[in-house]
Image 1 (cartoon, rainbow, N blue to C red):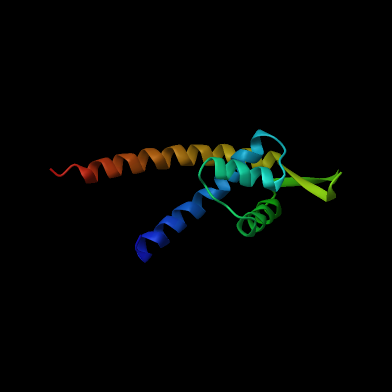
Image 2 (tube, rainbow, N blue to C red; image 1 turned 90 degrees about the horizontal axis):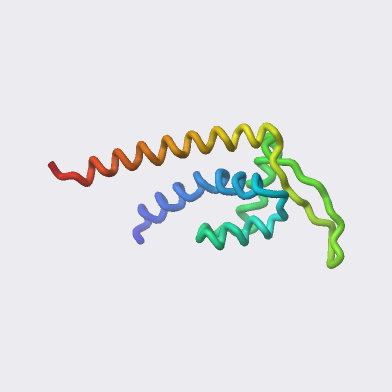
Length: 115
């Protein structure tokens, strides 16, 4: 992959990570390793060094909240869930995503038809 293509790929991927993370958290309260496992299962690789700053940013924006739970095998764990504001934001992201996918499909379909 050329440097230009790699950069474009990375930028596109970063743009959807928050959407995917919020979607995962909306399903149930989750521990960060659960998020990483679901992302990997969907072939969207994310590492702790990327995930934790995103979780902090989403929490500081009022979209996520967390609670501490004692662990039998180590330190307490943070479990994340959506706030009401996060639920509203995620609903809006779904609408925006659907519109974007439809627009891109129309645009790329037109550009592949060599009239």
